[in-house]
Image 1 (cartoon, rainbow, N blue to C red):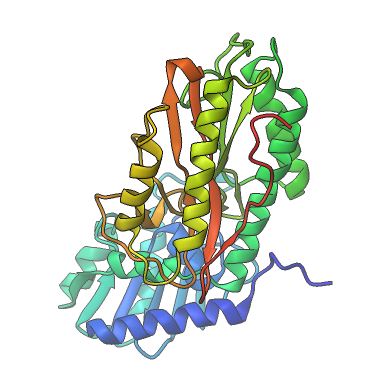
Image 2 (spheres, rainbow, N blue to C red; image 1 turned 60 degrees about the horizontal axis):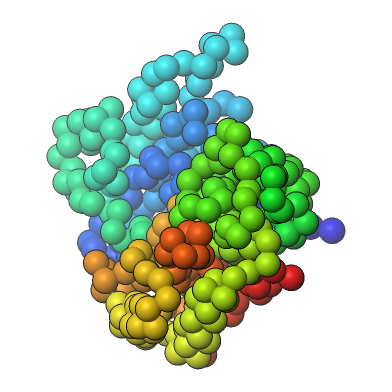
Length: 374
């Protein structure tokens, strides 16, 4: 049986065609990418952060890939060369220089054109100088890349769903062990363990919030759970480069009247979110609606973003935040995380689901229990 998490050539080729369409709209002859998530997105080859690969795609859809000699066996590309990332098993510190030398030799065998899209925020002078020296104009492709990354392919969704499975088992374990006297470090270790067992391999990244009686933060040495507190667990493991991000609040003992009142307000906001979000809905408008709904009753304070996209980075578009003016689109995978905080609630709760935007609405990708106590 073929694993749904292995390289999916059809999905990768579809992303390559979508980028070529964006290149045509911008009048680009080539795009050259060096950020590891973008190389992965475009070729299906996932490199460790210690390496410095590069990929180029022409307006005709011809793909060149350069990576370390011991690179992933599979990649969707037309030409592939390797650079010496190690000498006698010692990692070189000049990875980008070594990679760029091989890339420029490979690229020189093709007509470079005059307009090349690159990632302005990180594009190396090892590449920028020689390309400009050949008369090329370098233009910023990053905004287009971030927009293209919003629409998740079948292979990306499979990895995101697996990452979310990691959070599901983490919450199941948390509900078994959270009680007065358990330490934050113990909870952290237990949750990491069950996540790795679910993945069957090390995670790509883990995080977010593991503090009891606090809005968030890393676990504290010696800090134990106290009666009456709420434990906000905002978990974001990544499976093969793709992130989950959802949150549950667990009552250490029986929830108080104030805690239950806040929980019901947040449930009302989720009912509104699931009833109203569809393609074309304004993210800024949704933020305003939920902000009024959650802050209105006066049971606590909601003073952070409502959510964000997830994928190859913990926070992507769309942004459910009044500082952006995004609109929901088919293929978006995003979080919604309304919260309420107060000293009376010790210190509050944040509940968060992951959703996929479909043609007609949204699908809840994290439909596991949200109750404060089961």
